[in-house]
Image 1 (cartoon, rainbow over the protein chains, first blue to last red):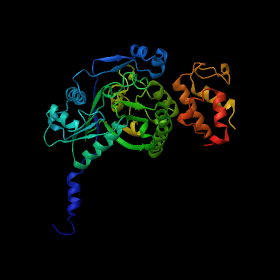
Image 2: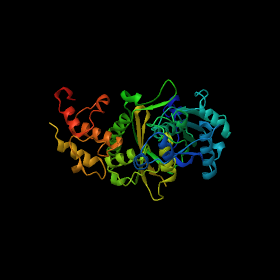
Image 3: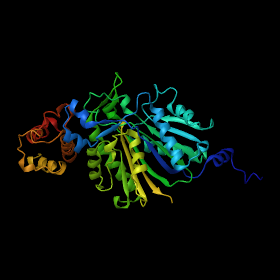
Image 4: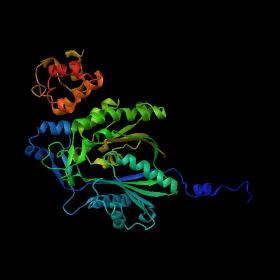
Length: 327
Length: 79
């Protein structure tokens, strides 16, 4: 080879690793069979049943069984993905788990526990991402870029954040909101949904608005979280649309984090998409980072071509992205 | 100067199906049947549209149209 044609070692390494763009091939979800009836729970909390039904809108909250843990939920979702969509576990080259309620105290990383339960290859890259309700979109961007850089063909993005581990059942601010559940997303270099541009950010001055206190219980400043979402989510959505030169009319469906009926409907109105942003979590609750992939798995019509996703919460962070049908 | 009509416009836009003409300026939102979520949405809209800042520790006292006006129109509370 002449020196003129020879690439630098760095370029050769880059060429050897970089692969085709990675997107979403399929999504499966898992929710435990047990559930809390919020209208019953509301009695003990002296909460108005009409408020629970019409404003919070979460009538049942999925609950993992005694003895189940975060890794069990994530493993169940992944097994469902293998079974329903034909992904071969032996082909999985990376496993990324989004959670802030890991098994034990997060050491070892819960994704390693899931890796063992699924019997994945030892050469599979495995790590956790610590994020709340914005975690799915963040995880999508991180995992797909990681896979593309390494030339991986198949990966798993899992979400599992059972807040039943940290919610105080006597706290009216949080006890009627959160359900346990998990999602498993097949990331592939032969995607059904291509990942478009993303918009990320954090209002870190408000990070105390959602936190776990010294007693290990979730504490929420509802007003701060509402103000954050009502101000930042529309800005994020508008930035994203402006960046690609699209209007809301050209988006088929908006998948907003399912915090409550009230926040979804308020945000849908504020972003000019009152009929495009469904609230669907009535039967299982706010499942944190699993709420957006649950929408993606269960509520996207076959003819939808372009989706806008937005997760927002803990941090207080947001992450929005566009998905476009690849085939 | 923010007026009663400004706040009433916000309430009409914010609280679905609520007839703002039935609300007196000095009537508390709670007595009028406005719940806690609509209440924080009203305060957010006041801050957003009028550039005010009602801090968390003053929220409880801003529980009527008149109480909001007393707070946001006080020069000492200019944002």
